[in-house]
Every structure is written in structure tokens, then in C-alpha cells.
Amino acid sequence: MPSTTSRRFPRTAALIGAAVLAASVAACGSADATPTTAPSASAPASAPASAAAGVLTIRDPWVKAADKGMTAAFATLVNDGDADVTITGVTTDVSRAEIHEMAMTDGKMAMRQKQGGVVVAAGAQAALEPGGDHLMLMDLTRPVRPGDQLDVTLTFADGRTQTFTAVAKPFTGAQETYAPGHGASPAS
Image (tube, rainbow, N blue to C red):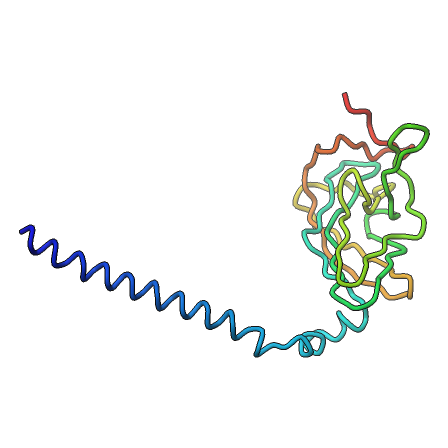
């Protein structure tokens, strides 16, 4: 019996090794093939509106759930184009909205409208996040409950627009309060 087991083990190990080697070669081959079959010159051609028009990729968009008053929307904005893009306005169907930032004012962190908008440099990204730049939704016309999907439209400096959908989440991080006065709540 021991001799049968010892004969099967090398054969099984050899088969597993061959399978792993074949999978590795296939993975390497496909990874190497991607750059040569999809040269950088064809990337803009496959998405001319994105690159040529300066449309952003919006990653992980979400909005803080709120029953009334104010809330905020967040995302990572990616500019794969070759020119800077400036966001100068924002609209939603549940409130009026502005681009805001957190900044030191008289020794305190305060929320205020961001003058000049948000610039997303060519080939870079910008974060809209709690405690930083964000899209402020004011005077909600209805509650924004966890799971709700809100359409948010960005307006660019050149007049173009782009709409994305953000999902509402409960969020208590950053200890911010989106309330009249536009200040951050004190950390206790």
C-alpha cells in the first residue's frame, strides 16, 4: 500500500504543477497581450467623449442619508483626459446644491462655498469626501433614506454637464453636521 501511495503522489503533484504552470503562462500571455493589442492611441478613440470632452469618471459616489435640512454627496473624480476640468456647479432633484469645502476660519474649521469650484487636473483625481471638498445639498425637499438613489448633475466651467447616480448611506464619520451656519460640529 505505501508503494501505491508514493507512486500516485508524484503523478498528482506533476499534474497540479502542470496545471499551475499552464494557468501562469496563460495569465502572463494575456497580460502581455493587452498593451500591444490596445495601444494608448486607441484608448481615446474608444471613448472620444470622455477624453476629448473632458468628462470625468465618477468612482464610488454616495450621499449621506438625512431626514431633512442638509446633507452632502461624495465621490472620487477621475480625469483621464489631457486637459484640466473645473466643476463650477451642481444640481439635484431633491435640493439646491453648492460645491463646499472645509477650511480654517478664525481658528475653527468651517464649511463654506468653494470659490472657483473643484479643479481636477489632467491625468489626476480629486476626492469629494467628509471633512474636505464635497457637494452640499441644502433645503432637502424630501428625506434621503439609506438605499435611495439620487441623480447629481455637475456643471463644468465650459458649460458642459455630467450626471451620475449616488446611493444614500447612513454615515456618522467625520463628526460633521450639515446644518444652517455651514460649520462642522465640534468634536466631543
